Amino acid sequence: MPGRMFLTASGAEIAAFFGAAEPRPFDVPPRRNIAPGQQVWVCDEARQLAEMRWGMIPVGRKNARGRPVMETIVNARSETVFDKSAFEGVTRCLVPANGWYEWTGKTRRKTAWRIGLPGGGLMAFAAIYDVWTAPRGARLAQVATVTCPPSADVRDIHHRMGVILPPEAFAVWLQGDERDAAALMQPLADGILMVEEATDVDWTAP
Image 1 (cartoon, rainbow, N blue to C red):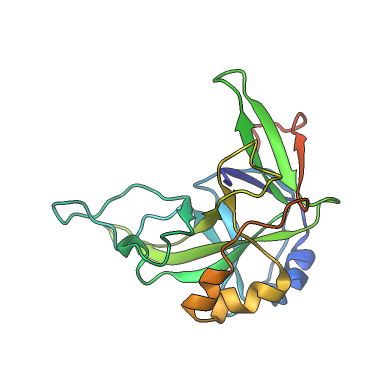
Image 2 (cartoon, rainbow, N blue to C red):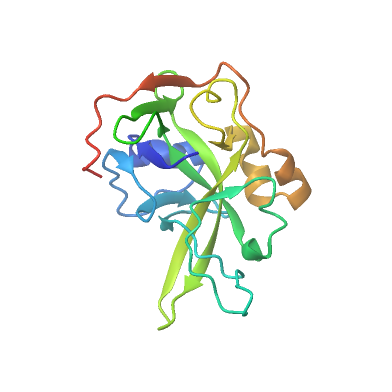
């Protein structure tokens, strides 16, 4: 959707993929089990790379009593991301990954599936970010990936998938107007993604 991601590309590969300058230091070890709540690399609207927490506490989200809602949102739906008050004032960005995981089956008997490009190349998830201010004043950069209906490659595994953008769409998503960016929130064409059973992942390791 994605619910877990993996990133095995080097720092230099990530920077070149986005046309971004490498931050110093930029030693990116392979990560095969990135979970919500952990730090992920993000390419922001200025083509700068930074780490942010995967999961947003929306700045504008309030309950019926007008109090802030503290629930974390990991994925934002493409159908409503530009309309909900919860996402008011967010900035668009990109999250690099070599792929993600989904699960099928019953509890305790689930099958894990690895989804990515043939050959394991880098991909970019469309995402949004903002900076949340905690009750005691600490500031935290936070990001949520954007999802859309699935392509035929993913449909049997999950009813949603992340919006994956090609390099030629990066500038529009990062800096284009909202209407043009909204037009990019579509599933990949069928036949592009590879889905295989993930039997070699240590789910207790990062």
